[in-house]
Length: 252
Image 1: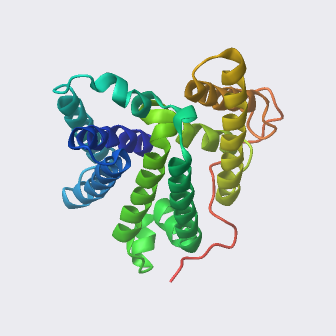
Image 2: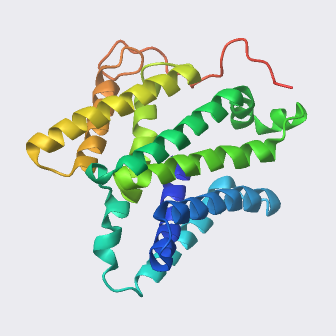
C-alpha cells in the first residue's frame, strides 16, 4: 500500500515537469515514477535503511518538486486537474490503447517471472541464497508497479489511484487465500467497481472516478462484514496470512 501511494505521488513531479516542457504527460509520469522506484531500492540497499524509510524520503521529495514547478506556472490548476483527481470520462482511444499495451506487457512479465517474484517478495534472504538476482527482482517489481500507476493516472488520478491498487486486492484477501486467486479475484473486484461506479456516476451526476473508488470501498466493507472466511459477521475461520502456492519450491 505504501509503495503504491509513494509512486503515485512521486509521479506528480514528472507530470508537472512534462506539463511545463510541453511533452507527453505519460512520459513525464513514467520517468518520475520509475526513477523513484529505482532510487528506493538503490538507497535502501546501499545505505542500509529500511525500505519504508527510503520510500518516505524519496516520494516526498518528488512530490514537493512537482508542487514547486507548478507553483511557478499560471493557469496550471485546470490543465492538471484530471491528473490529480482523475477524469475517466476523458480517457480517449489513444489512452485505451496505451493502457491495453502496458497492461498486457505487465501481465506477461508477471506470468513469466511469477515464481521468482513470489519467492523474492516473501523471503529475499532465502531467494538470494537460492541464487536469484534479488536486486533485479526488486527493481523489476517496483518498475511494474510504477508503470501500472502511470497508465491509471488519467482515469482515476494521483489521489485515487492508490485506492484502486489496494482496495480490490484487500477485498480479495478477505475471500481467498492463495496469491494467484487474490490476483484474479482482485481484478474482478476492480472491474465490477469500475462498471458499477460509472453507472452510478451517470445516474447520480457525480464525479465518475470518485464513484468508482467509493464502490470499491463499499465492496470491501461488505466483504469485511460478511465474508465467510474472515468477515466479522460471517462464519469466521482463524486468521491466516496469505501463503505462497502449495508445492512451491525455490526457482533456479
